[in-house]
Amino acid sequence: MTRVFSGIQPTGHLTLGNYLGAMRRWAEVDQHRSDALFCIVDLHALTVDHDPARVCRLSRQAATLLLATGLDPEVCTAFMQSHVDEHTRLSYLLECVATDGEMRRMIQYKEKAARERERGGSVRLSLLTYPVLMAADILAYGADEVPVGHDQAQHVELTRDLAVRFNQRYGHTFVVPKVTLPAVAARVMNLQDPTKKMGKSDESGAAGVVYLLDEPDVVRKKVMRAVTDSGQEVVYDRETRPGLANLLEILAACTDGNPESLASVYDSYGALKKDTAEAVVEVLRPVQARHRELCADPTYVEGVLRDGAEKARAMARPIVDTAYRAIGLLPPV
Ligand code: TYM
Image (cartoon, rainbow, N blue to C red; front, side, top):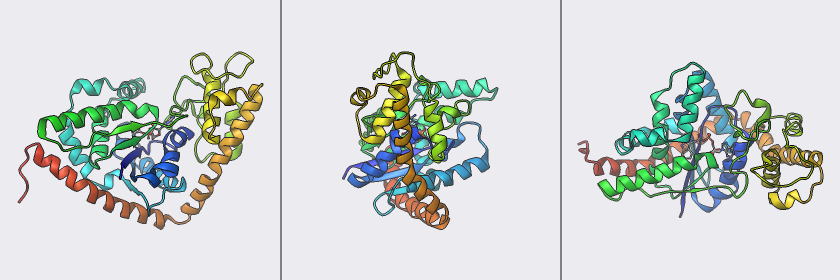
């Protein structure tokens, strides 16, 4: 059976971008067609300036929301990265295979490092090695596929390179995984600045970010105020009409439609915005309802994470042990 692995960082409140780009597929498709693992990557959240209490709170919230999207712990494995030591164990070995130059070429590293410097902070070494830990997340489970949004594709490419390199040098150890992107909404943009990704840690652009837990009226307001492009006609063109294209993609993703054909249905921006807002509200409604139920039952969520970590550990340990032997480390007696 195909094995799927994906993860999400608890660095902010989860967004419509996370949902349409990744989480929805995990719940609706991936967990049913594969042996799937979904991980809250809390160690990754420590790679930028962080508040310990906030990371802890957001980790719990991310776990609750993941389950609220419909992940079923009977058919998939949901867990916290820091509960399974194999991730950091493997990450070190992969650091011995990766190069400094490769890390510095990563787009997310360049962007996040620049942001940290702009804020007057220093860049943590873990931000540079972030993609190696991500590669370890994936390779530790022998994942065949990694369903993510477009912004993570470069990291999955690097994971493939590291797996191939390790296998060539030390013998076949890792499955070489491939990225899978959603058909639409692989890159949901900020509603106030459609040249920028809708990101969860984007405090400056929060008015353009729809959060999964936004009340329906807040969602409506954000979508109705979305920046659109000059012009009258509703056309789908990401290059010249990015604001409109973003709305059409969101609407298409929420209604299982196609952005090009939807463009021909509308003759005003207002009508498109109104329908997009309602479609988003409807997509979020069941997730929010289930989230309220789960918040009332925190021991259930804790139990899922405990069992998930146990299952994950049992899957990762033999693969990581094999890598330790392959690279030349003496087994403990
Ligand atoms: P993260 O936490 O930024 O995002 C989680 C998932 O949501 C997708 N996503 C988006 N998709 C479309 N439009 C957007 N605006 C948008 N924003 C986020 C992301 O592509 C991702 O799929 N490095 C990863 C977490 C990670 C991981 C892993 C993922 C760590 N280890 C191993 C896969 C496998 C990240 O920061 O995702």
